Length: 260
Length: 166
Image 1 (tube, rainbow over the protein chains, first blue to last red):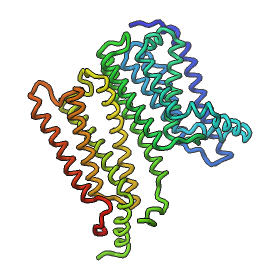
Image 2: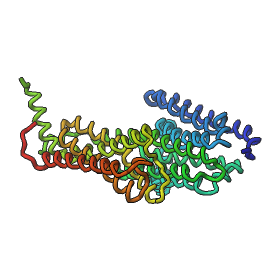
Image 3: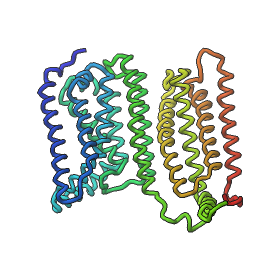
Image 4: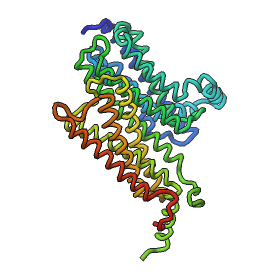
């Protein structure tokens, strides 16, 4: 299956590579700078950031990304990377904390005010974030969007940006690594997380059973199972961090021994 | 011979576990559901190939319920172990109650799977091309047995029980 966007790839690939490299350089620069004002920025966060950006690169440019245009299994691998693994790694790199450290007090206040605003509250609510994340996937695989995306490079870019952004928003709304302006309760986040995980599993089975347009049955079956079990694996990490945060939050404060 | 610290610990455990009796139960239940779902998937789907996660469902409801249940059990397995760790650090772990909860969780999952998923929604069967009746009977009988033993353990650890301290 040949698709129309092959010739434009190289120019776009160059732009993407340059952009991603810039993102790494800016982060590392801020990390080194913040050492002057605060204590040392932990190296593991930089490692998370670099690997997160690396997996974005893998899913947008290079051999796997090229394969993804005509092989659904490769396509699904890149989607797990850009929609789930990269967002998790980027969230774990605490970019907002680093941003606050790098800004002047005045601009940091402006950013805080923005983060506390009503639209941001609505957008970053776990329910909205999960809907954007999972709803986007249903649109992609249950409508003609999957077919159209491979015809128009702009749409292709837009869909992949949405995958990454919605994945980040969702991950950040479930586990709190950076400071959060509006905190949702553990119960609410647990329910949203389970529902999102369920929807992800249901969609992967739908892909297995009735593939998107132009995808051969055998590839859809492998791809669907990859989405199902790959999603489980990354979700297990997400759930573990979430539960660990509860474990720290619910530490005993000498209340149990007093009564009873 | 017990030292004072050991006595104090045993005494504290007796009190703490009554306060956190519910958390002992829920940690066990969640672990039971997670384990039963995991065993079902690993042994019957993947090792024996008796049935798979998608056996030509005739019902959309089946698909959705299966998805929700899988997600819940996946979450439950991990969450239950953190609850377990919390009980240990509070010196409030109550093995009998926890195991009772676990058996209830596993039995309830298996009974739900054996009646609703297999029979009502016909999502998949335990096995194909054989006489299914002995399998169904064994499957659901084991489920009921698990529920019964679990219920006995919970009854023995019911609240407020004036039992000996440790």
